[in-house]
Length: 292
Image 1: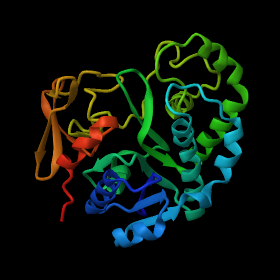
Image 2: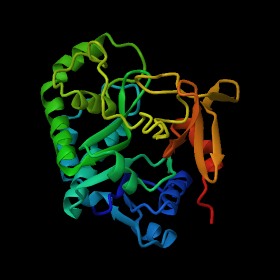
Image 3: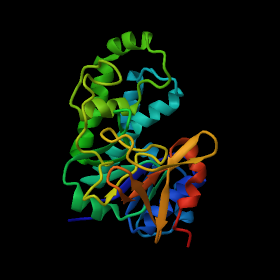
């Protein structure tokens, strides 16, 4: 089987992005960045498995989507819009490059394994996402085939073309932070539901193709370092306080690989990646092993 690449969408050149890219390459992954400043990145990262393209070349679908988008979130407009349209950029890129299957991940993630080998061994399906203790799904780390990603992009268009009146009714009484985002779209798509009824579906269905499952009782993928579990087991991992209010997984590094004690299984579990969402980016450098 041919190599399954990793793909990320990111505009900018923050320090954490370079850690993300160099670490992925350190573990012999094929890395595709859809971003900007192409010449700058080519000079900074000279590697046969690193590919960068300008995101503006792949904006046909995103331009069509923007007039449909309505903002129903306490987060910034531009942030939520780009979180949704990034899937369209990635789809167009995969289609052009004839990439049949890829691992798509956020730029504040450190990889600790060869993802292609992992996918070929453990993930034969067409879509895998991460789940959270709040019963949501997220694409911070995700596996998609080209066909499945195409279906998801079509779903995004259909959702905003047909569901705005129902979302407006819901939003009028929604007082909490957050709201509609790309995770909402992934959640509905993953559960094959097209009619909006709220942020969660009745009976809180579980998405079976969950990357945060513990595979073979030995390894898993991190939703993000600040949470202790997933949909099914929300309190699986030993946590440690950093500062007065912040908790993260109590990570033990062994030969450059992160492990965390699983209190349910009573054993250490190896993590294929760690996700440093939000303010946790500031500790990302402490787990960065590709320093040479």
